[in-house]
Image (cartoon, rainbow over all chains, first blue to last red):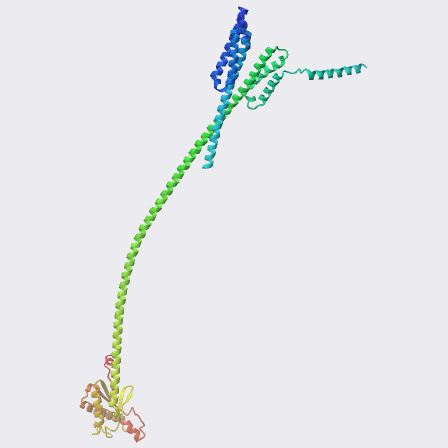
Length: 122
Length: 353
């Protein structure tokens, strides 16, 4: 991705070097927003609040850098926010899977006790 | 010498190297070491290692690159790359744990499926058992009803039997009653018979007594004629008081003896009289037979003349054949000349036979 982004940045930078930094920053920011949005849609608000907050904070920092037109900072912070978003989404998936596994385990345990009681009772 | 110098130099170099190692570490920064340790422990973790191979490889590559570049990087670049490496390590961990939990979820849901099937099977078993036990109960109920019916039937047949038995008993009682009646009648008849027999016996006894009395009175009346009791009856022997020697006419004095006889026979009309004439051995037997017969008839004629029924009287001459004494002496011959009157007690019952 980074390679693709770099190639695209280079291609986009051809008309004018001045535009290249801003465009790279915007692309990175877009990717970061998409990552954070994906995490939110996956349910991170409920399940991975801390990780999501970290990602949003980082995204906010990238957007602030965007306001100040510090394209390198934007690119770097957006990249970090995107990683945070990926992590938040992964944690969301992890916690959800663990939660349903635990619920299922409890259910299976209840069922096992039920069956043993029936088996012993009859 | 040259060799010694070299030795010293080598030792110094070693010492320098050791001191350099101790004072200025050449390894990766502690943050990177920490990340490497995290990666190692994750790879060893059975919940992560097998499930996040690609993510772990990527994180490892990034951590390796950072470890290589760490000393050359600017502070902000190092921080950025450390941040990114840390996120990759954490993502690898999260992915691994997520997949592991997913797999466990699948395994658990399969197990739950199995258990539900088992539970349903157990339920079905229980239902079958319930059905069987219900069936068994129904069967037991049916048998009980059957038994009840049997008992009722038995009771009915017993009642019938009891009725039959009562009827039989009644019939038997009736038979018994009839038999008792019959016995009573038989007993009555037997008693009547016995009474009759007793009466007959009494009558016989009375008759015997009567006959005895007759005999006694007859004997008493004939006591003067020296009547003696023999098997044939009372026998009165009349010697030469009746007849002269060789004569068959009664002497006038004979009436005295014969009238007593007539009186006794008149008093006892139930008697029969046999008159037997006997002689001694003087003279021929034929003559004596005739003589004795004539004498017996003379006595019979006298008795008939005395009013005795001729049917009661028989007479015969026996001649010299039945002497009662010797004919050698005159005294003996006098005893042999005689008429014997045999008076038989005439028993009407005996005469009937």
